Image 1 (tube, rainbow, N blue to C red):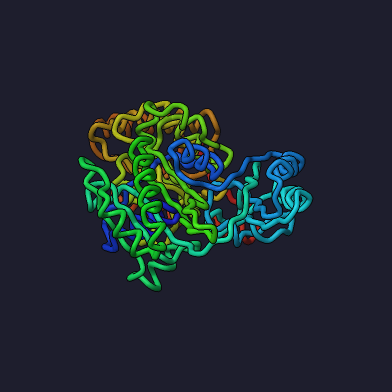
Image 2: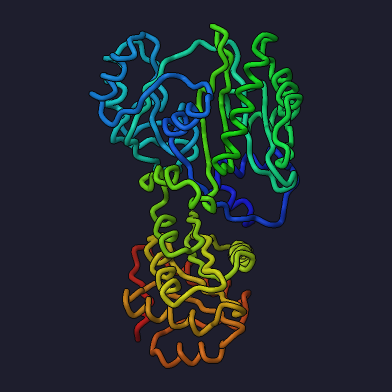
Length: 444
């Protein structure tokens, strides 16, 4: 249950993990990484000698037109810059279909840029709300003899980097893994010695590069690996890696993810973070060092510990409910963090009830209680809270809540807490659908 919920929120790197390791794990780890735009990725890659198309970024239709004029070619492409896959088949609120458009003149570039910039692009990865396009990338168009897929990612099972490649590039790689898994090749890399020439040659031959271009393909794979290691990447994905009609080997499109834990080593890279493309709830959570992933349900969850958080979400699903988020306050959360967590959950208009499930070990129950009360008093939150506390300082926590004068719905165990949360959410949802007024006034 939980695996499906969380995996839907973690797109490319988790999908690629599944390509590398087809076995299903009972554990799902939260992945926090920096994702950059295509134009930023290609600029960084070019500094490592990686071959990419000539191009530049524009924020207005006029800028896009000027870039096209300077390039002085009739073979042009305009690409909407959003942090989501599936752009080519996406739809804009302007009515334009496709976030990647072929153009033959600077006037065409301006026309398409005007239909992209400032408009929302909806793709299979953005959700129905889509993402607003603030930049377009104008590049030269190449005629491709062969399109392939190439990626490098960290794999838990292999204990290090793995190269993943397929001769079927330029398409949805998850579809290839589903329909033709034998077309996907993997090369685990010993991180202590690095990628070896025989590995890159083996992949280049399997991908179908022409004999004369195999050394060039090997060179590009080696440079991509060097980029991956040097910049603490969690993912380098090239789709397609192409052999052009003129005999070049080019990285036509790039997706890069960087490990957030290495931010202190790469301040220039992490300055590229585009928060306008991220879930504002997750951006807010990161400010207070909360582990948060927004989901589509209506029962908010505040839990300490990733394992308990996942168990709480699973049991909500078991009783017919749907979690609105994954939120782990961790073992050392402060009263301020708990308060901000409650604020964050209650700011989601879809949330009809909130389940607080705390097992006090390192995290003390009284700190949770004080944070909850502070949030309720500050915001006058009307969303009903079901609270289950066990462990360190639990009696002190119960007394704090009793003395607060606030109505908090207590539960003695997780089953009871989950059932109450689900029933309350159902009641509120049914009342709203029937246009009936119903309220849970927490301050009595």
